[in-house]
Image (cartoon, rainbow, N blue to C red; front, side):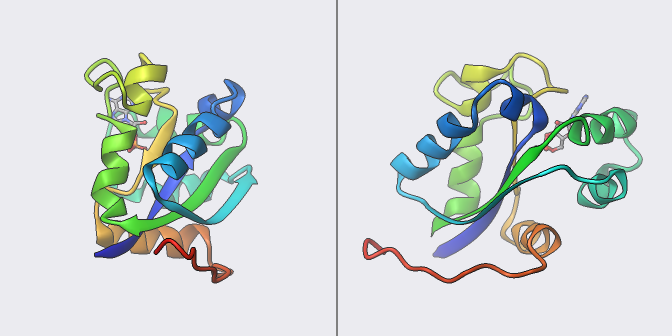
Length: 144
Ligand code: CMP
């Protein structure tokens, strides 16, 4: 089915110059960029995005990492883009991520894993609403 997912390039990805690389992979796969912004997020906002992980020992470090520099927040649309986008992203631990995936090709540290992708259609809906409360401009590719 046609889906939307939330993808975020984390501060390490922005600082290492991987924005174009990430966008290129999603575009070339055949997905459509529906919204995008480069922003610095507040600590309270990062805590909201990662609320489900608040009891984890790495939560504090994770939030510090996300607020350490600008991130690129995006909405991508396409057939089965939630699960297929996760395949392009690769496993959470970059050392376990397959070569050919973004984390597999560009990272070695679980705490600096370049990118976030929604893990379910339901979480994608929640994350898109959190990150793009202003809404998303409508456009439709003539390819889909
Ligand atoms: P992400 O896909 O954004 O979802 C949760 C994030 O928590 C994950 O990517 C990692 O950045 C981070 N994370 C998960 N497990 C660990 C861990 N063991 N140590 C540090 N960070 C982690």
